[in-house]
Length: 493
Image (spheres, one colour):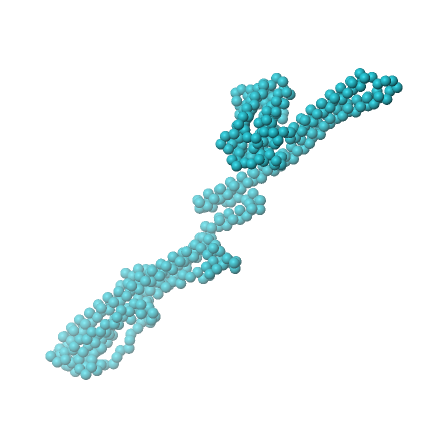
């Protein structure tokens, strides 16, 4: 039989995952099939094993069907050939004496493949001794023979010589020889396929380990980020997809590192600003309140001397001292009001935001008589929360101060509008504008700008400062939640 026509597929390969390392699953999660606790490598190998087992099962079925057909065709062909050979032998042996013809036929057809020939005399007794069943060394197991063996066929041919029937020849099909041959091929093919599959699984296990190694490094890097170690970086692997992930991870780690450094700078700036504010407050208390208190003390002492004198106190002197005390108290009130307004705008959170901005510009105009101030704040809500209101107030205050102090502006226009859940603030002046790239900055320039930018960006807004030709223009946009409530009682920033 030509066994080369049988498809070369795996036969009888044990594809159950036996010695693969599997992660220990917790008792609460591990069920009858703890797929969710397996690693990616174990899952991929399990899928390959399943596909391999399915392919082996299909291959076995195809081989069994082909082998059964081949054995049936082979035995029938052998049966037809032997029948023809027996008939030709009987016809050619007509000259042989009848008593030796049966012995000749028995000896000639004693050993044949795929068929067995039994010569019987006219009394139906077997001529000669029965030949033991010939089997190869590699006998096929019973279950394999039962799968492939076709039904046994038996044909009987009369043996006649010179018109006299001497006996019969019984020809019986014997497919075990062919089945043994097929079993040898099938076992060799199965062992070869099993060896190839084992080698493939080992190679796949090693390859998956190398392919998934970047994912393990990614997990280790994420653990570093979880522990606030932003110096973690990944080497780009060979796979393009994993290289993209590594690149994105490195960018995220670098961004987190920059944010951490920026937070550190902001913390230092906050501490510095607090110290500067305390220093300025202490200096103003010393420079402003100190002389005023000394003058009040001196006037009080003068009034005491006038009152304790031997003569009648002079009304004119007492009135002068009282006028001086009143002027000093007014000065103290003014300084106190400015100091409190710098620490926290007095009406902010109690009066509408537009009113507070109008009062801010009005007070600024009183302190700078030659400055033309225009404010347009129509359409604003009563308030947008303590943080937003204070940020808008400080930005308008700082922008007007910079326009006068650094830009020598004579006109400042401030406008605030609300549209599409955004609060837009624009401050324009006609001063000298921003210095060029090579021009030296004035002392103190930019300190207030960084504070405004940080306040606005902390609220998720945008801050822009550009030349307006002439002058400069500050554009601020702060998002406003559509379902905002009255947050004016929130703690001050």
